[in-house]
Each structure stands twice: as structure tokens, then as C-alpha cells.
Amino acid sequence: MGQIQKLPASVVNQIAAGEVVERPASVVKEMMENAIDAGARRLEVSVERGGKDLIRIADDGEGIAAEEMLLAFQPHATSKLQTAEDLHRVRTLGFRGEALAAIAEISKVRCQTRRADAPEGSEIQIEAGIAGPIKSCGCPVGTVMEVRNLFFNTPVRRTFLKSDSTEAGHVAETFARIALAHPQVHMTFRSAGKIVHDLPAVAGVRERIATFFGRELAESLLWVEGKLEQVALWGYVGHPSQSRSSTKGQYLFLGGRYVRDRSLSHALNEAYRGLLMVGRNPVAFLNLEIPPEEVDVNVHPTKIEVRFRDPQRIYSHLLSTLRQTFLSSDLHSRLQAVP
Ligand code: ADP
Ligand code: MG
Image 1 (tube, protein in one colour):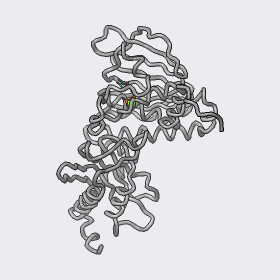
Image 2 (tube, rainbow, N blue to C red):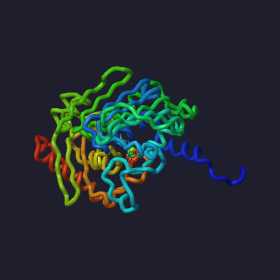
Image 3 (cartoon, rainbow, N blue to C red):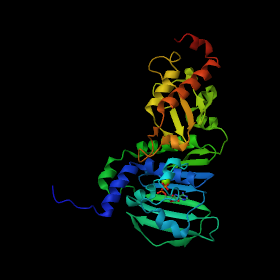
């Protein structure tokens, strides 16, 4: 071991970038979430070579002011919270102010953006964290982010990436999670020049479920809804006849964000006890809305894991709402037999 030294900013930033950006799909997630936070009604995602060569996200959201463009790519710079108290009441998908800085550190980014009150758009290019000049450009209101050559300056990371089709698969899964959580936004996905999905804005999510999982499954879904004081739960769960051998068809959204929670997955399986054969898993597309002070979403850089203040309460709310749903369906008689 040598002497203790403060790391140079570039190294600090690369380490931080590694926490947020694991693969192209991470970039797609962060940028789609930014677009939704910006109020986009339309969001276009395209990737080349699974996102390794190019990720392009275009939205018609509120855009970034020219004078804030540099700041947007600085670490810990965000328009979404100001004080420590705000941390406990975040309603946006982002708030850590890390993503753009992290992405720009390990790729070549071009951003074109325009706000509705700006006469023209502005453009910036950043390569490995080094920003070029801000130029004016013609562009519609909204933001286009292009990320090229991810990990080009961290070659070891780049070698950890999988084949183009595997990476494209991860991007597709990320796209599906966000599309299922935000059906009111028109979303398109292109991979290697081909349109994979073109999903018009819809009020309910069933149409999108049909797109991703097939019409037969979508038509068998049961509507679930239950409110317990401030905790709202709603969505669809699959009929037992539509069960799967893996848990891949299970989606839980908290405040519009895809999350994973062991305890809630357990509650879901528990609710189906007696309705499914061993080794089979239900499909579910469930949304939870909880007052922000009841949940900490700041436990993981990508926010995929969260911590509930009262997990037991959420667990039993989910379990009893699902049981209630089954009891008032054609599954009624099959449930009677369950002790
Ligand atoms: P965070 O989302 O946590 O605030 P980011 O690094 O993802 O951090 O983004 C930094 C800031 O850049 C955001 O707070 C927002 O003000 C702005 N921004 C990023 N993407 C967009 C976008 N697509 N449209 C409008 N503003 C954006
Ligand atoms: Mg963000």
C-alpha cells in the first residue's frame, strides 16, 4: 500500500459512473426516466448494437435551458430537489443528479434541447466528461440525448458487455418496464434500425400488456384494487391458467418506478397458494402508491430496491387485496378448499 491520497475527480467520477451504469440498459432507464420527469408525452428510444454503439432517446418534454446545460451534466446537479427534507417527499423518478454526469463520463454524449420559450435549441457534446462549447441548433421543443460508444474510455468495462442481442434484450426489458408503468406516454423502440414497438398512449395498461405478453394473457387478467388509508394498490394479476415457470412476468411499480421487493413477491405467491401447481408463478402488474415519507427510495443507486417504513403493513395489504379479488371471481370455489 502507498500513501493515502485524495483521488482525482476523474477517477471519482468513473467509480461513481460504475454504480449507475452497468450496461446500455442502465443508460436507457435513466434517460427514459428523465424524459418522463420532464413531462414527455412522446418518447422514442433507439439503439444500435444493443446500445453499445448508440443509444438515442428523444422526448417532447420541457427541455433544458441553454444556461443550465452544463450544469445538467455536473455530478449531484438536479432540478428535482433542493433540501434534505425534499429527499423524503420525492415524486419524480430521478433526484440524485448523478445519471447524466455518470453517463457523460464514460461515453460520447450529444444533447440537443429546447424549451418552449426559447427561440432556438442548444446543443452540447461531451466526451469522457469533457464538455465542448454550447452551440445553437434547430430542434423541436424537448430533448434528444445521443450516447455513443459506451465505456470507450474504460475498456475493461466494455469487455464485460455481452453480445449485441443480449444487450438489446436488456434494453427491451427496461423499455417494457417503463412502458408498463407509464401507458399514458406514447413510446417507440427501435433496435438496429427496425421498429420493435410503437405503443400509442393509452389510458389503461391492458393494451400494453397484450403487446408484451400476448392477447390471451391480457384477456385473462383480473383487475385488482384496494386502498388502505394512504396506501393505494391497483393493477392486474393473471388468471392461474396463465401462470409461468419463471417469475419474469411479475412487475411491481412504486410511484411509477419498477422495483423489486422480496417480501412483496412473497405476498404475491402466498395469495396464489392453492391456485397454482408447485413451481408455477403468477403474472402480475401491480402499482403501489405510498406517501413518500413512508418509503425510502434512496437505498440503491438505481433505486431498484426500496425500504418501507412499515413493510408488514404493505405485505398484508397486498395479500388481503389479492385474496379479496380471488374470492369475488370464478376462483372462489377453488379458494374455499385452501386452509
Ligand atoms: P436527476 O434526474 O436525478 O435530476 P440527471 O443527471 O438524470 O439527474 O439529470 C440532471 C438534470 O438534467 C435533471 O434534474 C433535469 O433538470 C435535467 N434533464 C435531464 N434529462 C432531461 C430531459 N430529458 N428533459 C428535461 N430535462 C432533463
Ligand atoms: Mg435522472
